[in-house]
Image (cartoon, rainbow, N blue to C red; front, side, top):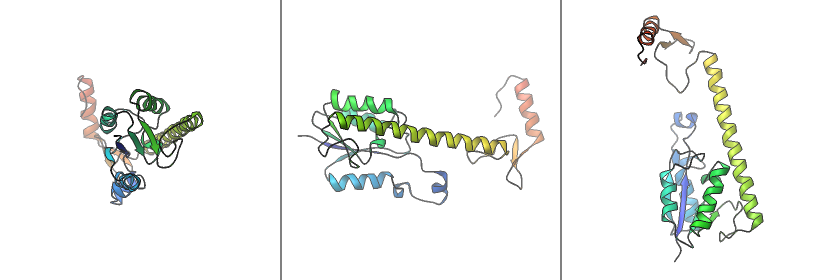
Amino acid sequence: MSTVRGYLRSSRPPKAWRERGGSEGEAPLGIESQRADIRARFPDAQFYEDRFRSGRTARRPGLIQMVDDLQPGDLVVVVRLDRLARDVRISVALEHTIETVKEARIVSLAGEGTSADGRTDPTETFIRRVIAAQAELAAAQVSLATKAAFRARRAERRPTHGRVPYGYSLGEDGRLVEVPDQIAAISEWIAAGAEAP
C-alpha cells in the first residue's frame, strides 16, 4: 500500500517579520500552513519538515529522511515545487531519485508540472524544469538584493545582521563609531599573530 509523504520546508522568516513578533507558522508558506493544506487533501499523510532551511541546498535532515523512507508507489506531496528545491540541479536530482530510483511520484498542490495522481508526461517534466529554474532565479535575486543592502549599510557605516562589531559602538545617528581602545587592541592582536575576538 502506498504512503503519502508530505514534505514541508520554510526558510528563515524575514527580519521585519521576526521583529513584529509574527509566528513562523502564520507566514504564507510557514510549516503549519503547508501542513494544513496537505492534510486537507491527504488526511493520512506522514510529514517530514525542515524549518529555516534553504531550498538551495540538499543538506536537509527532513528531506534526506523522507527520501530514505520512500517505497515504490509512494506519493511525495508539497504545496509548491519550490518547497523541494530552489536550485535546478537539486530539483532534477531529487526528481530522478524520487521517481526513477525510488519509483515514487511527486504531487504539487499548486499543480505545477504534476498531474493529480503524480504521473508525469514530457510536457509536465518540461514545466517542472522551467518552474525549478524560476525558483532558482528568484532565490538568486533575493540573495543579490540582500548583499546589495548589506554593502550599502556598510558603506554608510551602519551595522549589518543586527549587531555591532568589536571595535565599534553605535552613534546617536545609528552609524558605527570606532572605539579607540578596542581598535588598538585589535591592532596589537594582529601584530602578535593572534586572531581578534
